[in-house]
Image 1 (cartoon, rainbow, N blue to C red):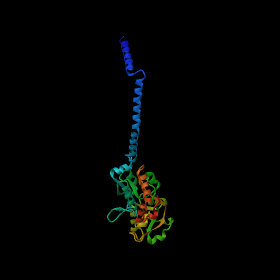
Image 2: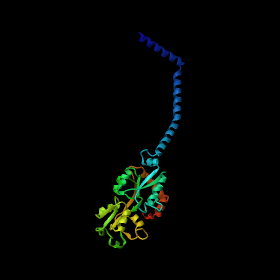
Image 3: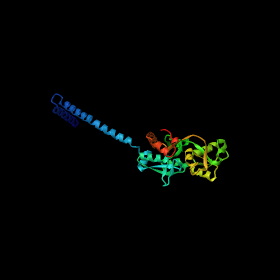
Image 4: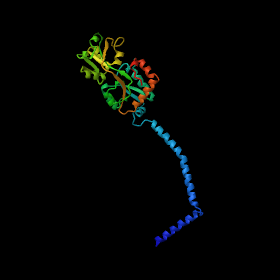
Amino acid sequence: MRKLLALSLAGAMVLSLAACGGSGNGGTTAAATTAAAADTAAETTAAPETTAAEAEADKAEEAQPAADSDMAYIKDKGTLVVGITEFEPMDYQDESGEWVGFDADMAKAFAESLGVEAEFIVIDWDNKVLELEGKTIDCVWNGMTLTDEVTSAMECSNAYCNNAQVVIVPADVADQYQDKESLADLSFAVEAGSAGEGQAEELGLTYTAVTAQADALMEVAAGTSDAAIIDSLMAAAMVGEGTGYADLTYTIGLNEEKYGVGFRKGSDLAAALNDFFKTSYADGSMTACAEEYGVQAALIEQ
């Protein structure tokens, strides 16, 4: 009985409210429609502002490198750490101890374009991939040949210089070593993990692996090795008349190869460097740098 009474009272209240709200011509419906239309208009007016703000936020977010990117990493610490060996004319120290050379100067310019400083660390060339992965360096920029092994282990830039591996011997016996067949009985010095070591293995030559190409030249000059295999660009700068190794010369070229810069696998810095290469080649600064160190003939158009 109480339930029936409650339901009756509720029904009466609904009818009463309906009567108070209307004037007999649908006033309640018209008011609600007007209010709804006003709300819709307000939302429509505000929507473009919200969309524009969100678009700006999205754009700003896209402009920033991902938190786990190499770009973000080096910008956060303020340095691009470059792994090198002493390799004139690409990376070597001047009289004041500063690292200079075609690669060193280009690395400094690239770092500056990113708003950071270049820092150079001499590495064991045979451990360059481990150095990258361990983040003791951020890139390998030292006349590095783009071999299959290198490109599979690193994120590499486009090629920027042509090169070859050449045979170094004492100048007074150079006429005896003018083809690959004549090299069979010689003992060679080569840089460990280098393209020169790769050529020695490929040709089945007897060799000793040393720390750097400069050490390979010292071995030949000292007579502890009969010959060396080094990069042609280094040979042009360091061997022959007017150099520190005037009694040495280079004879035959063993291959053709190209130089590139290596970063950690998946690094976004490789694409950034490719863009930098294109810009600096187009504005002439890359060529000017190459001319300063005598490597302009080897430069590859970007």
